[in-house]
Length: 278
Image 1 (cartoon, rainbow, N blue to C red):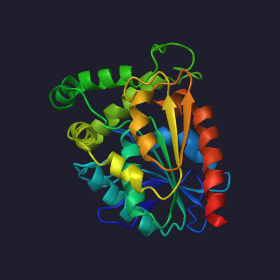
Image 2: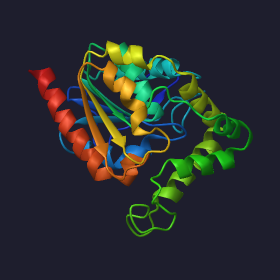
Image 3: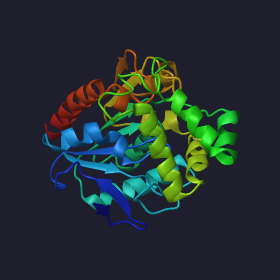
Image 4: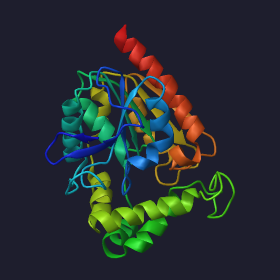
């Protein structure tokens, strides 16, 4: 569905009609991605009692652009879209860059945000000079660097599992192809804009301290992009934090460890929506 904002935002609803009166789970993807990275979790929740809005962030794939240059500006657009959806109670779920956006969006929607789930989060979310330069000057090399660091070290491109959970499926190659498709559709400026926004964001601790709802941290023990230890300052700044560390998980937890991520999100959603209703 399209959210009636200007420019318009696209949201995948998990194969079910969106009902704003139901508890709503809003999914926010990471850099150079789109809503499809959440397909395994969003579709399940949409068929088990929740309304789902898995967004394409502004300027990404089906959402109109350009891509905003800061985490705060992206959060402004996301908050506008969720208000326009008329969702009454919202659980925000973000991964990597999306987790920073979720923190900022929670500040803007404190009256309707019942929880925040932060997956593969770090603060500060620094990006190396070499990678930042490659995003601008050599995108194909940047894609390779990101793809290597986004998966746990044990994964090789043709390993049966978890890199290839089934015939015709490969986490590594499909992640690479998704990044290429976004570049083909949205232009070469999205990748450097996304990574620069992560690198320059400074509001994480203030946003964590401002949370008026519970927060779930899901961290991969083998995450090379956002090491689990790099979330500690956010955890300490959050008044009501639950921390789950996924053994063997890298940065792309939703694809590498989909069952574990879904289990924790399902538990957290049931808890925060029950508390909000009570």
